[in-house]
Length: 248
Ligand SMILES: Nc1ncnc2c1ncn2[C@@H]1O[C@H](COP(=O)(O)OP(=O)(O)OP(=O)(O)O)[C@@H](O)[C@H]1O
Image 1 (cartoon, rainbow, N blue to C red):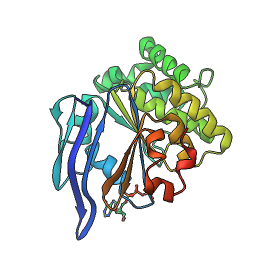
Image 2 (tube, rainbow, N blue to C red):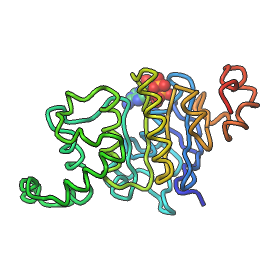
Image 3 (cartoon, rainbow, N blue to C red):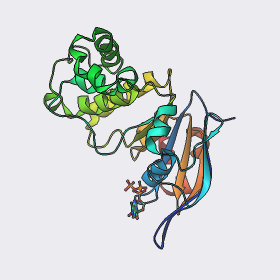
């Protein structure tokens, strides 16, 4: 059984059907990619999978449990983390404080404990370890707004990892990154995929084809193609979109 499964999801906004019937399965330990044209419904799909919107029909299961229509908070607590196209960081706080605030051990504490965080060395050690994992060792005390754009994108992933999730959803992680930043992120996510199940929406096909174990193409509110990068290379739709050339 897949770690995370969506079955026949249907989502409409008023009269506009965005997801007609989308079924997806993400296997534990794999990196799954989602691609498709602009406006195809990829972010809406993430929003339904992670609880921001309830589907009109269909089911979502995580680790064998039906989580359809549960709130983002409940779903996050079960071990599902996500990042957004637009970054969600506290710009005035340091890199390490952004991580500390998001730590599972800290979030579950009372506010009085949070105020005493300056003395909570264990939380800071855990956060420093996450900063090392995402390649930001040495930037602990740097205010978030003084980090480069690429460093902030990495920090956002660190914030998601701070919840120690079982599955991580990343919405267009390369957005706004140049070639060098994208190459660094490729290395980072390549390392993270050894430790955690990851699902990525990505427009950068080269990036996705190099990282993903499996890719699903969403178009017209449905999954129109699915397979490994090598399998997708032979898919007629992918070939027409001139994406097949990027498969290994
Ligand atoms: N909260 C909402 N209310 C109404 N319509 C919405 C809402 N969220 C998304 N939509 C519509 O759903 C459609 C799909 O949008 P979505 O952002 O999911 O596509 P996408 O595939 O992620 O696009 P992109 O690749 O450009 O990010 C769009 O027409 C959008 O306007």
